[in-house]
Length: 596
Ligand code: GCU
Image (cartoon, rainbow, N blue to C red; front, side):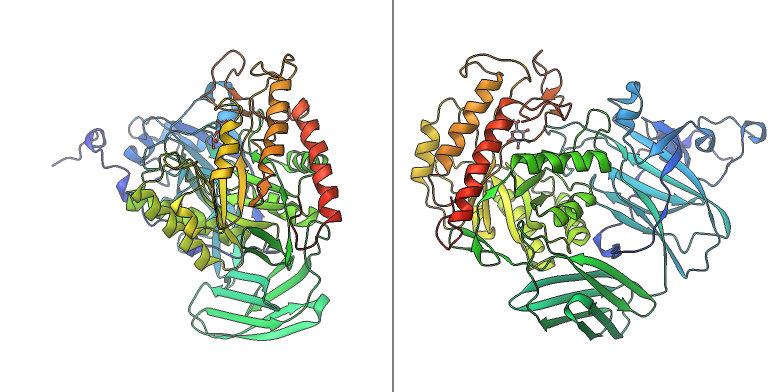
């Protein structure tokens, strides 16, 4: 029987063959100080709205041009136009702004390194990705904001290699986030892409933290090797050998290092070695704990002067760069923040690195956002993997003080099971940080009372009294009604304001309205002794297709600063003043008493 050239038109199972192997946290590589061979720059780019690439096998290693084709083709990925990586295709061409589909990134690289192993690291691909090298499917990844690693060793050849990454940003009900969310659906390879030349055995993880008077190390290798690793912290005169058995090792060394804090963000160089591999980290030693309704940093109660941030930009989309990052931290400093909630997905890895240097504490989270398919085991596996990839990436960042496992999820049994298991997974992966979630008001009892709180260290509360719920009587009543037995952080509150729109504070979308709501909010919530942080929504206006009034024009206008990331609204100045007052009060009363 002759081959049917049209068979692919009738096969709707075309993607299954390349859904696995799934690239996830188990394949991570410890990155501290590691040499990276950058693949950033021009990549050939072919849009693929109907998934023809998987249906017709665009990934086959055939770079022949039309002159050599025996039959016609609909694609030529190796001759397509180029785009810049990292970048979002949604911002790289106006006509691609709303493109929700698949796209093929193609890039040649020459390999002549004698390294025993070669691994590709993709900083982020929104939402899913499939990696092909020289016509071979290497693996697939889910999750738009965490790095993943694809080992190329078995498929790389000396000389020219052909790397293809299929990326797709279609929204779906079983994704994390699902198909309904209040930010722009960007797509693309939007963070760095690198090659890693690695020894035969290398470090997948080297977690270092301080707790209970000890500096602790937990390491994991690429293979079940045994032997001796070495931990070096020159500034503390520490050099110790650590036994490794079947690819795992841990150590606890009595120490009393200078602690990291916002006031003194001290970082120590730490080197971990095993065989031919080593990683070098800059680690801040600190302890973050809760006691009753207090949050303690190095044993001292603190109040988190925060703000929420989306990693969103009118030009860069979901991508960022050093200038955008430095501007962001300049605004945090101007606001007097000692805290930031990185909503609603893992931000660029440089954020926690800069926060380490500048002494800003962070809430980092995964996008378990609104109505997730909580009963779906595959959805849980996706969420858990994104959480473990985030923890693996930022495990040595002192600034990250809490992992957020969800945002505004209705309190159902399926959600309770899903998110309590996520909280458990976070604790098992990282015993050194707090677990939080942005919870909703319990409308039955009108209390801060989410049963998930039993699995959390910090209860985040999203409430919008004064904006979505008129007046503040409800807020007073809620706080008076509630008896949480752990700290509460106001993880979201705020109001829209169009920069430059002035009027009475009772007029919606004016700067006066936004500013007066935040002023009243802060005055009310700080009366409750269990409220230990305030994190208004949010630093900058951001793109959202859910916001279509003429005043919004596809933007959520709750920023303290407009979408130009320059025009400060009245609320920015108000909050900066209020935070300076709180900081002064905290400095005067930084004893074990309530510091606000
Ligand atoms: C919610 C949600 C945010 C959203 C905000 C708003 O609290 O968590 O993602 O942008 O409200 O309505 O502006």
